[in-house]
Length: 260
Length: 130
Ligand code: HEM
Ligand code: SF4
Ligand code: SF4
Ligand code: FES
Image (cartoon, rainbow over all chains, first blue to last red; front, side, top):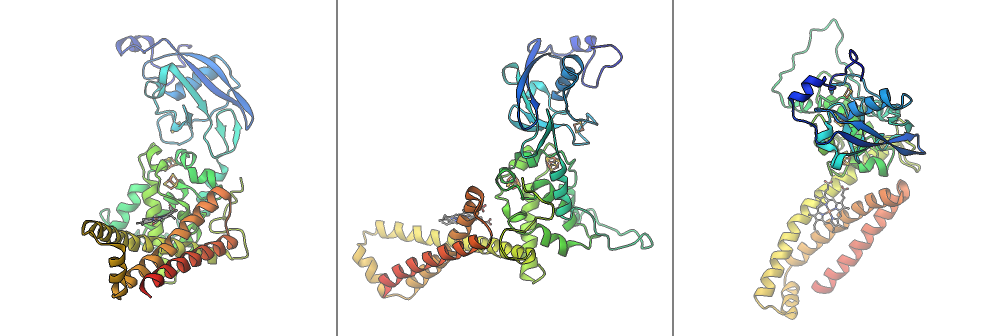
């Protein structure tokens, strides 16, 4: 590694000697190369303390094969672009330490499941975000800039429900972990429905009639069987399962009132 | 993948998307409500079996009691209606996911299973009570 281009999470040699030494000096990493067809290629990568899976991928790309395609931006768990399948489990790679996931000094890296592969570790997120739009994941404002700023009590039931679901970074981990998305590709999926739930609880929003009609049904919230893979895997510890259960209740209420 | 945006609620068949969403939502609600009824009925059912076995009641004695009562046949009618509502909706979900069988024809098949369960169940109650 060249001095001066050290990455965050790529500690310098002195700092490394101060912390606990790595379990072993290198790790074997099988990386998916290709698109829908391809194969795993094995790389040997030196271990570092506090090394993340994203550090491993970056090291391979800088030192072994510059043609390796992968995606990241923030490296601190905010942008949601670095998710991959790590030893069979969808994870955000920038905040996943190798120590925590590398069984017997092995890593297997694949692109996220349930989405088309562009190349190597990069999948096409279009479908994922198109479904946010289909679930009416955009605020439908009821006021203009001339109106006073609405006051939303932080402790109100609606605001607390929205707050519990709002911190989604759009990483797609939940979507890749959901069996129902695999079984019925038109299912909107946990992230889009979780987003819709935040807006259902947004008192400034006026689009709920259309939103509930868009998310009701067997390609929407009713497809979910509450198995909670999404909730288990979400790196932000959100609970899309709970949001979807809330949507089912909201849809039932609308149905009984004749508003669906 | 056929994940066309805006596909929510749109299933194959001749049914409009809004109508489809209402059917799916109503089926879910029916399954949820029937699940509560089933849970209560199963408890009564198990308690009765427990009591009957411990009390050493014979089949003949049980049939005699049911014959003489209005409440027991009524209870079993409720139980059967709940099961006939609940089970086909669940089977419909399995058929959709595992066999790709969905839309209008799946709804008809669901209704058919419901009617068949209802007929079989009611016939049994009729046989006991009638
Ligand atoms: C014995 C009494 C039963 C109780 C208390 C019960 C309870 C439930 C509950 C609470 C649900 C969830 C409904 C919802 O989404 O809100 C459910 C769904 C379901 N039940 Fe039952 N159930 C019973 C019997 C059965 C039987 C006999 C079958 C099989 C034919 C069955 C098959 C299903 C299926 C397939 C689902 C759908 C699961 C899903 O879509 O996520 N249930 N049941
Ligand atoms: S709880 Fe629902 S959305 Fe989440 S993984 Fe399970 S089926 Fe998918
Ligand atoms: S809900 Fe969680 S797992 Fe899903 S996209 Fe948002 S942050 Fe990622
Ligand atoms: S790189 Fe931004 S969340 Fe991982």
